[in-house]
Amino acid sequence: MHERPSHYTPTKDRLRELKERKGRIDQTVRELGMNVTHEITLGFLVDDKGNYHLLRKSRGELVDHQFPTIDQALNQIERVIETKLGFQEKIGRQIKIKFTGENEELVKIGAGLIESAKLYPTLPLKQQAKYAQEMAEMFLPALTNAQNVYKKRAAEILRTIIASEPPDTAEKLIEAGGDAFEAAIHGIHILTGETIRLIGGAGRQDVWERRAIDVYGRLLMHYDKFRSLEGEKRKACVKGIIYSLRGRWGIKDKLNSIKGNPYFKRIQSREIRRLDKLEHYLEDENFEAIERTLVGAIKKLRAIPRDRSRRINRLTGKPVRS
Image 1 (tube, rainbow, N blue to C red):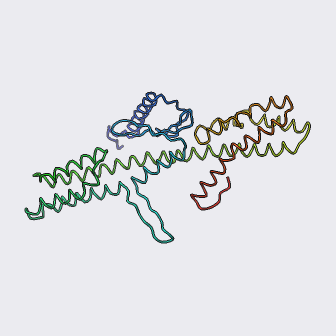
Image 2 (cartoon, rainbow, N blue to C red):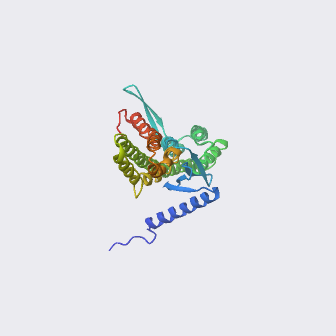
Image 3 (cartoon, rainbow, N blue to C red):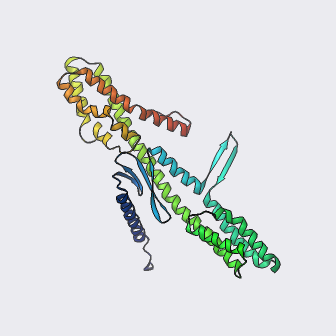
């Protein structure tokens, strides 16, 4: 039976890496005094005010990037992905403009430097120094002001070649090219993490919106029935509304499960909290107050299905019924 090498423990290594990363994130959260109410994905958090936090590593430390709404957080994640991967824009029906991503540029730099190293020794001695400096000058601008350790290292090597041709120039070009490839690989790891965050955030947004829209629809049906009844039937209707507020996955439970803005602020509003007073209003037979409460809650939630329809319509170009 074929045995794996003793060091072949990718699952354990990955779990250990995630555990260490989680520990660093938890420590940063404690240092910031952040009260986390929901974790969308690792390092993508929601605080007790419904704001979003993206914890990203910069210069060896975790930096907290804060956003007031989930759309703003997702837009920022998309920008990071586009920076690494590139994007394409369409003009009219036929013309397409492609914007090259950082990763593609790094692969081109790596390949260009290694190709230069292969050509370097074939040139006459008098041309070698000039050729190496020209290649270094051509690729250096894309690596300048970099924070990535591999890009920094590649830039330092190219500066050495420009300043004075070292005796091992071909090896230096290969080394710089290898560092460019390493930076591209590092970019792929970042892309993977950001894509997971984007999928997790979009999924959570969809769940929260659907719950809010479900509550909105139920309140509409309750109100429609309420206004069509009189006397004892109206009282029974209000009792049914109060019952629907309670229990697991009742109206209040669904609303309280929504932790992020822009929905969280609406759910914490006075209009929504007033639903808790329906039982008191029923005891006093204050049907005017009951009607005002239902209408107020409906108006407060109305923007959520409307905004969802607009966003999906903008993305797909087709009207969508929530």
